Image (cartoon, helix red, strand yellow):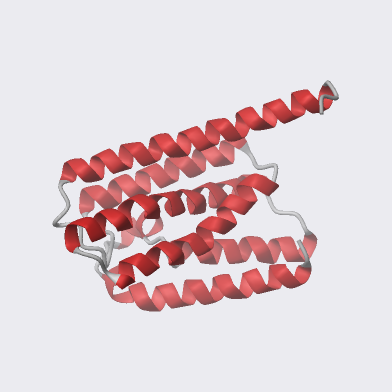
Length: 193
């Protein structure tokens, strides 16, 4: 990836983090401080991606454990947006803001997907990332602290079903990624085309 593209991604992610912080500020103030690290999503992940792209632009290398955590969580929230926002709109009616949130989240989710595909990654970083993501979403569902999202009209069973389905889907992606990498290593070592 060129340095110019890395700088563009760095700038866009900083803008995304700043914009999300301003937009979510009122909701953030209503969330207990000790929940911030696992509940505040939209301002944090673009900022963490900006740091990652900055490190990559400086020396081309990033700690694979850090990279894997950020990549899997960013991608997981993208998958989650495909479940949760349509559910919100099903129960609360179509809303352009909620529809647009899917694209907002996929801005950083697509970067996570790119990193998961292009970088070697670290299996333990991904396990930690999936664990952090699972705890984050679970706490958000249990405390109804998604900030500006109104989940009061959605039956708890639906949210639980989507949460379990999402975790299973993420685990499947994780397993298939590593099965594919094992297959690739075997085919390279056996010189199979």
